[in-house]
Every structure is written in C-alpha cells, then in structure tokens.
Image (cartoon, rainbow, N blue to C red; front, top):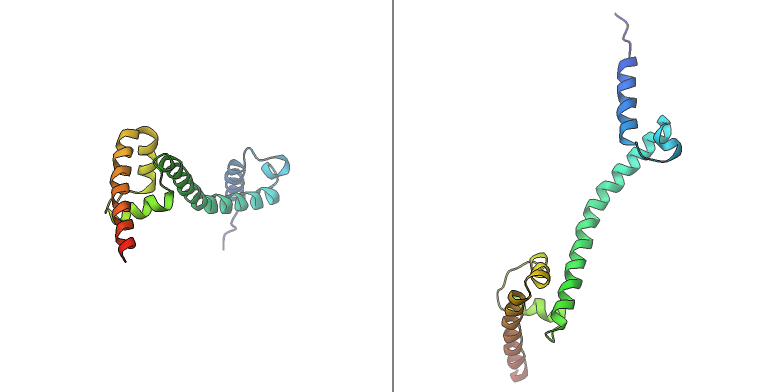
Length: 127
C-alpha cells in the first residue's frame, strides 16, 4: 500500500483555523491548541447570540412602543390588548418604526385602539 503524506492537509487546516482566529489576542491567534478552542468557543457564542439578538431587538421595540403610547395616556399592555381587540395585525417592529418615523400614522392607530379600549371598558363596567 502506498504511503500517504498528510502535510498538505495539515497546512491547509492550520491556515484556515488561523484565518478564523485572526484578530484574537496573544496565543489564541497563532498557537494551534489555543486557536482551536478559541474558534470553537467563538462559534458557539455566535450561534447563541444570534438568538439573543432577536430577543433584545423585541424588547427594544416594546420599550419604544411603551414610550410612544404613554403620550396618548395608554400603557403598552393596554395598547397591545386594544390592537388585538380591534383586529389590527401589525407586529411590534413595524409599530415601533411607525411611532418613530411616521407619528401621524401611529397617532391614527392609537386613536382606533383607544376607541376599542373605551368600548371594552364600558362592557366590563356593565358586567
């Protein structure tokens, strides 16, 4: 059986690994053992934080909506409840963008929601 020389693959693997760890500090960028663990850890953190990024974006939208709705005398939870009752199906991202960039349009949406909230309050008062 012919002899297999593996220097080419070793060099290629090492070169690719060091390419991914470029910019890391100290031995983590140039020593294979340290670079391997650093690259694995970086990949795991990147995977996890792609999910966390979505979570933090949603909380930011909620905070922006709450701030925008407070000016109309509503709370965030009452606003979302009114949206659902008035069958307005817009997500929080779009609503926060509207509140930020198109305040007139957002004000009209809030007016519809406020009307729905008042109707719901009257129904609860009768019951």
